Image (tube, rainbow, N blue to C red; front, top):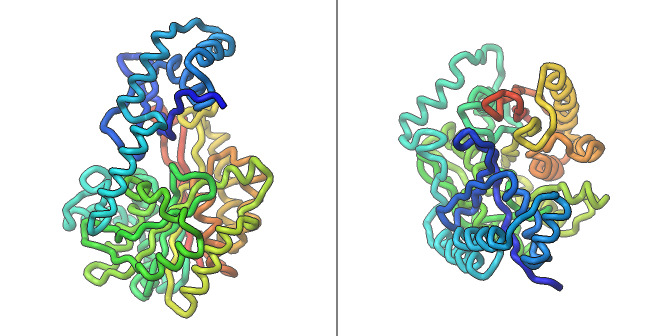
Length: 403
């Protein structure tokens, strides 16, 4: 097998730099502080950095398929820049990842990665900010809810704050009565179908939310050693954190154990015609989770977003009024399936269109619904949030409570 440069899983964001359309290549794991700005032509070149092609083959493929000449010096320079930034999948980046994982595990807790950036780091300021999101929310007539499941966004608070507030304020009674919380968060960088645990408790500006180490170990034993293979993803992944903050906001000085669970993409099941219900490792994990939590007042949270559509996500269309209306209808069908606790219909609705709307909470919601078993729910909130400065792309979010 030919060995060539292989790029790591990166986050590519379209940006405008000096009036030019560029791509920002960012390392989600933060192995180094380097970020690279790439022209569209260089970004296209990286498609061939898959470990299967030598630099000479990359040159030939690029010129034949893109139809543009490229110098070997450009390819070699790109390889050097990527290597220096630890963006290539090689021994240098693997060693850096091992070092960061060891440093992560030595910490007493997982620090809040977005404090001071995505929300206030000062507890009093944070409480004020979260309270402000519910200023116009009328709870008159709402009866205390003591259910088992919450669908909450993981979009930033600036855009999703009112939806967060609506669902978490209505879940307060259940949050206060719970003995254990499971947060199923999207692992935006996880390997396909993965479940990733951590032994570290999550911290928020309010303090530390304890973990249940004995339960984590039993779950890892059921799932296998891979449960910690991608533990470093917890360090910067925001999905669990943004729900944990609201949870802690409600619990205050009476925190309860929280099990953070990162869920990798289900896209491969759709593409290869398989189904998560036939995955023995996932089945063992869910069965163990059900067995070990039986008889406890458990609150399960899926920290998720729904659709990601428009030019910012690779679509060749803008989200005009007609498309927004159509998306709202397809999202409504998904929310109805969730509210009925029907994980099979939820999966089929997404698989039937090959996840064309890029449902960010696909795996987390499906896994949580299977854990909960038979349930019904109520839709609390829905919104479509802008995802670019032109308002041509959007992310849809929702809040649902499940009994």
